[in-house]
Length: 266
Image (tube, rainbow, N blue to C red; front, side, top):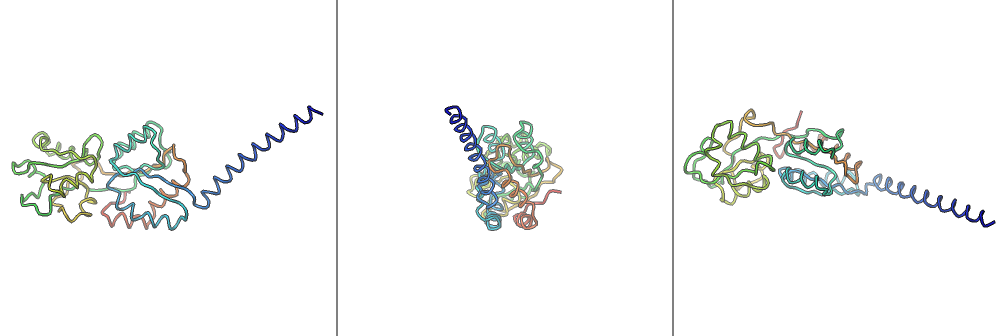
C-alpha cells in the first residue's frame, strides 16, 4: 500500500507541475492577446519627436500595450545592447551599428528592414551674423567652432567627416570641431550659440526655431543615411515588438515620418 501511495503522490506532483507550466504559458499568451505587454525601443535621438507623436496612435490601437523609449546615439545604444541592457527593438540611424549587432547574432534577422532615410544639413544660430551659407565657408577664419557628432559613436558625425573628407577640408577644419554625444546635443550647441555652425539631419533642423538651415549636403558626398530597425533576440515580448515594428511601416506612420522630414526607404 505504501508503494501505491508513493506512486500516487509522484503522479500528483508531476500533474501539478504540468498544470502549473501550462497555466503559465496560457497566462503569458493570453496576456499578449489582451495587449498586456511592454515594448522597449532603443532608438536614435533624431527619431524622438516622430516616435513620441506616433506613440499614442499605436497604444490606442493596441489597448494595454505600452511602448517605452531609450533615445541616444546609435553607437551608444549598440554598446548598451551588446552589454546586455534590456531592449526589444533597435532603431538605428545607420547600418553600421545594426550590422554589428547582426554579426554578433543579437537580432532576429527576418525582422530587419530599412525604414527611413534622412539628409545631412548645415545649420547656424538663427541670429548668426557670420554670413555662412555653404559647407566650404566653414574653413574661413571667422568660423571658430563647428559642432558635429562624435564620429565613432554618432552616425551624423560619421557622415559629417565623410563629407568634409570628400570636400578636401577635413584636416583644415578639424581643430574647430566641438563634438556632441548625439545629434540633439549638436543641435543644442548651435541653438545656444556655443558653436558658430553645426551638422545635423534635416529632421533636427526642422524642429527648432533657434537655428536656420543654410545648406544641404549632396547625397553622393557621404554614405547613404538609412535607418534600419530590427527586433532583438533578447526581447521579452517578441510578438508585441513585431507588431510595433509593423505599425511603423503603416501608411499612417509613414505620413508622420514624412511630416518630420524623413524619407521612406525603398
